[in-house]
Amino acid sequence: MLSLSDLRQRPLNVLCAGDVERHETTEWANSDDIDVRNRFADLLQRAFHA
Image (cartoon, rainbow, N blue to C red; front, side, top):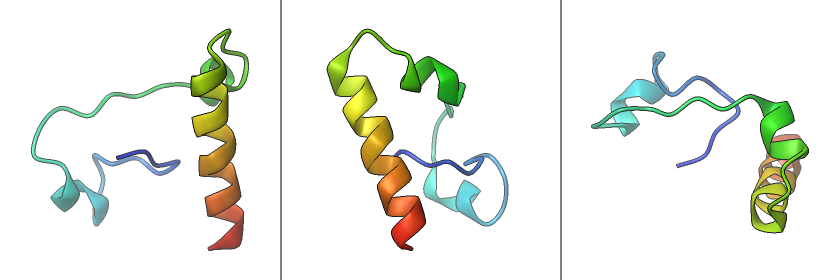
């Protein structure tokens, strides 16, 4: 699951049974990996259309 919100905090913490990885947005936005940048762009688009 990808989220701009902290998945360790309520109410989203109930969705995660294991460890949660945290990544800075600049890490994703400036990634050399096109797939990472595309996932980030998709996440941003979904956040603004919600």
